[in-house]
Image (cartoon, rainbow, N blue to C red; front, side):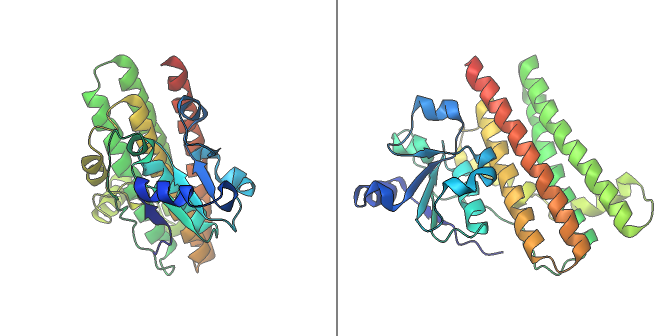
Length: 278
């Protein structure tokens, strides 16, 4: 699956914006409102990642778009979503606000999106999706084990619970597609053999966390990371839906996209709640 979205360093973004009139491009902040209030780049339009698909009409598709967030993860997911929706020239600012303010300067991080040809059978689609959901759930459960407070444990367990619900849906889809009843354990063994090591949207969790250092250690960081992954998955399922040749596979993708969209909004509410508490 090819991506037309491009990465832009902070230095490149500064040069780009300083050499053009503000109305010649769109600088898009995809963080939450409270993050925007604390600090934002001059002239930036705020559309939180969770609201982006609902508010596409506010972004001019004929102008270049530069997305940014805190550290570059959510903005890359947003840029990819815009690219998938037909926006012609989209850039994600690597390092985000942290790099802009000189706190860090992360380089590009590749998102290993699982390949999809459009010819997969519906059951192959569900198996890949299940494996991705399971990897993210493992990440949340590990964080719950490492958490030092009851509040953090509850946060990670709730996030893991969302993934468990999604896996239940996928298992139900698989049995419906196959027209037979099978054990969840057997299905899981098959699914986890495929796409080993990937989370939703094909993101390699450990690779990304290793590259980003301790940016995602705190609660807000974990929620931001989860939002990036969910948006990647949403983009992945939307793209797959458009390319699916079989109606049954398209239906599965559309269902998954709706669930990811709802999950993304839930994560945004979690971030807002913790932002108000800080």
